[in-house]
Length: 463
Image 1 (cartoon, rainbow, N blue to C red):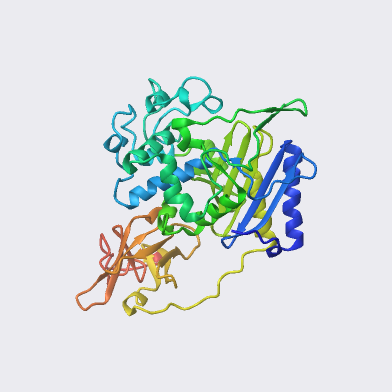
Image 2 (tube, helix red, strand yellow):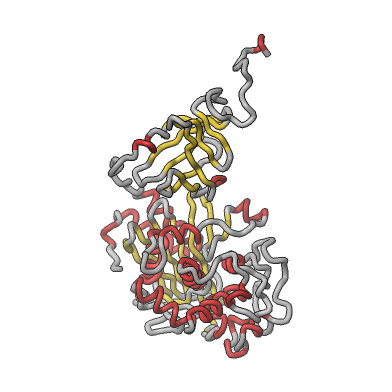
């Protein structure tokens, strides 16, 4: 994926450069690199550095920390799609003897397993993984700090277990499986478990003085699947494009929708801040825009990958310091700058390639009780049900080819929609998870549960 700086207007490019320059200067980062992806292509790359005459390019590796978790989640979802496991399976079914086997695979992916946030013993990010050679060393004697499934509690050991699960079911190391199933198909040849030149060095910047201290670069060993990877803005830009569109060689767009669907009970503070967690992806609602991706940090490095699916935009920000700039905030701002300055041009409207008359018959206005809804057919073959008031439950529905559809989001996600017909073949009503939708409010000619008062509608005098 090459970078074409000419794809953006000069004023937009200057605004992007200004944003990362402020982040590097105010965050006192030895270096900071960033990229913007639009329509599946890198359209801008920029860098700022404290070294005169040197600016890291899109091929320089930085450590990406917990963005690694999204890669691990992709491997687990691949196993799910192959039928090797179900997300509701307890870990014990596939990886016995860990001492944490009661947690389900979905709970591990969503950080709701109840496992501790960190590994016991010395600070694992600044010590050799050889100190924790086995999963038992990562988990410790009391791995759970909360009941499984009750709350969101970020857990690095949880993703260590998922790495072990991948290794068990694939019969190969997590690193080898990742390279074979994700990195090579997507062309991420500068993403690796260990640093490959050219790469940035990790630094700690003194909080009260403009001086630096080199951070150790440790191999995380068993905990690699939680935060080991090194990558570049070019490679993460490709990965961001994959997270938007999917790639059937790796993971389908439908499975990626599963990953970016909130899966964890939220704390009250998370609800207020617009934060949720899916299956290996962070989900944020910021300034009217839904952003998904992941942040990462290890001593000496900060990272963020942020995607707006609706805008078909993504941004990557990498820095080589332990603290200072806020990479997610910067990445979100890069997305906003481009989206506001050069809004996405929608695809031309096109009619449906073919038409099923029985489905067209369902289009139009329907009533659930007295609530008015519109049912529309869309060119992508879906049905869309929306309240006419603009407020209330809405969903798109995917067809099954047998006259039924399944809801894709919101209250009706997973619920079945079907048209119930009279003996003469005409439509009596729509059944949506037992809710009856009729052509008129409480249509007396339809099978409305509880029946319809035979005296019909009336004014105040007849009440």
